[in-house]
Amino acid sequence: KLFANEPERDPSLKVLAKTPCNAEADVKNLETFITPNEKFYVRNHLPVPVVDPECYRLTVEGPGIPDDFELSLDDLKQKLPKYSVTATMQCAGNRRKEMHEKIPVKGLQWQSGAISNAVWTGVRLRDVLEYAGYKMPDYGSEEKFPGDVEHVVFDGLEGYGASIPAEKAFNPRGDVLLAYEMNGEPIPRDHGYPLRAVIPGVVAARSVKWLSKISLSEEESQSHWQQRDYKGFNPSADLASSDYSKSQSIQELPVQSSITTPTIGEDLKAENGFVTVKGYAIAGGGRAINRVDISSDGGKTWTDATLHPPNQSRGRTWAWTQWEAKIPVNNCKEMELVCKAVDESYNTQPDSFDGIYNVRGVLVSAWQRIKTKIVN
Ligand code: MTE
Ligand code: MO
Image: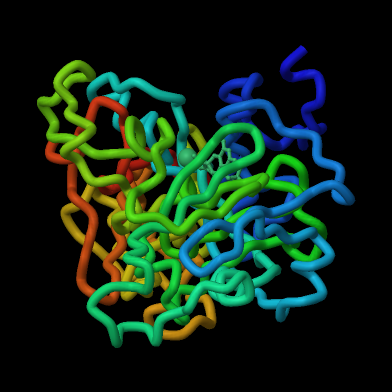
């Protein structure tokens, strides 16, 4: 009954759990810059709410904002400027299965498809807050934000919730959006119809779908997912000893990269003595990818991949970089391919899972290794 009103889903999605729907993208559909809506991964914690757009209201609460302030969908579309941002969403558990295969972890066994990229269109969070009556700070000029606001809390209609630091939310270069369109269409039900928060450069868990309320607060969201989930711990901490009150909630993600051609078990065809390897890379916080290194001998020697960076400005590189590399075959019958990315701050990925192991299997960013056979 709870799940009687779920939307239809594209057969290309790899379903890890049906109710609630958790389905990763086929990585072959991640080889284009924009992921088509129906190929975009889905990660729901609860049933998809049924929303009547006529009755829908967004509530906004905070210092200087009148009690019971709310906006209809038409208000958002007509009273505030329209704005688009291209941003990649990545789940904190992307690539968890690889960590699990080394040491077991607790969580859905995502491979490399818990990530996708779209153009999001809607209104800027800053504009909404200002319109509601909050005195938007001249960014960076004050010790504290007006009303001592430290976090912006988002609640979803179905009960999910999360927050982001006010610093990110208010930053005019932070590009935080309330989106009503995804790739030029009304946001599909699975992705938050009719309105979702889009927090570029931050773990997708904070981009709350089916947004019903925004509150300006001195505290983080009190939701389970902000307080008791999506945090990192040392490799020896087990579920019982993980102290959630001491660990910081995940916001920006570490540098990540993955190979999409070949996938596990896929052979590569040699052409004129070369094979072509493809994949994606992304850094947290709007940092650009500076380099992707590829090895075909398990990590002994490396070559630079050719990058296809998004056309986004410095510090606002919210979308992934796709890459490819032509690797000489040299009579090899087998290769152990490895990829790792380096961002503009020279942050890079750890070579193994040992030092970043955590029992929930989040923040999985070790070098990716894929063995492949070469066929002629
Ligand atoms: N928002 C709501 N309201 N409910 C949810 O379950 N899941 C979060 C985030 N926002 C979630 C949510 C998580 S963990 C992820 S990874 C992304 O949405 C997934 O977004 P997508 O389904 O559009 O890919
Ligand atoms: Mo997620």
